[in-house]
Length: 319
Image 1 (cartoon, rainbow, N blue to C red):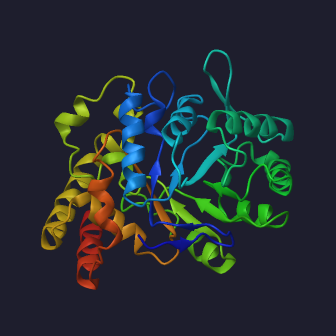
Image 2 (image 1 turned 90 degrees about the vertical axis):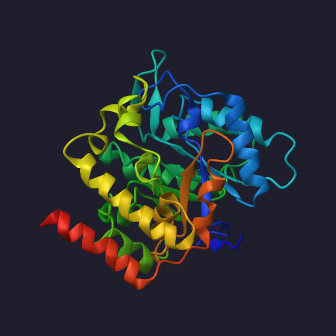
C-alpha cells in the first residue's frame, strides 16, 4: 500500500489507519458498547498483515484499556506499525472525565501511555481537545519539551481551530491536525483545510464514515437496537430530523459504489481521501474483516460527475 508523508514529520503513513476508539470497550462515557478483546486483537493483526502501518488510539478510550489492547496486539509483531495516541482528557477514580493541558498533567499522561503501550517513545502524540483554551500555550510547550526529550517522536493537535493552531505554531511546529471530516461533517473545509495546506500540517481525518452512519449497514432498526451504553444512541446524527437526510446520502453512495464494485463505506472514505489536504483517514474496526471491507477506498477514484451527484444531493436537501 502506498504511503503519504504526514506534514513535516518523517512519518510516511498508509492512506487509512486503524482507529482504536471502539475497542476501548464498555463502562465509560463515550463507549461504543461491550467489546471482546480477542476480536480487537485479531482485527488489528489482520490489518497489519494487509499493509496498514499506523494505529490511532487515545488514553481516554476505555480509560486506558484501548492502549493496553493495542500493546497486546503488537506483542511479537516484527515490523511494528506507528502508534499514535492523545492526551488532555483525564479521569478520576470514579471514571468521570475532565480536561487539562497543564504541564504536570500532560507529563503524567505521557508516562502512563508509554507504560500501557509498552513503547519507548510515542510516534505521534496529540492534544485530543484544545480545552481548557487558556492552557493551550502551556500544554503545547510541554508537548514540544516531550519531543525534545525523546519521549515522543512527533507532536500534533486534534479538533483545533485555525486561531488555536496559530497559537501552537508560534511555540513549535505541529506535524498534524486530526479533525472530524466526512460527507456529513464538512465544517473544516472553508478555513481549516486551506490553512493546513499553507502551513504544511498533515491531516488525519477521523470519523470519515460518520461513526458508522455511512457504512451502508446502519438502518433505523439497527440504530433502535444499539445498546444503552453506545454513545451513538442519543447522538443527533442518528436521530430525527437529521437521520432521513443521512440515509438518503447512503442510498446515493450505494448507487455510486455499485458502479465500481465497492461498498457505500468505501465511497465515503474515498471521498475524504480525495481532498488534497487529507493525508490519511482513520477507520475503526471491532472485528476481523471489518476494516478490510473498507480498504478498497484507497484505490477508488470518484469521477467529477460522481462528486457532482453528491453535491447535487446536498443542494436539494438544503433547498
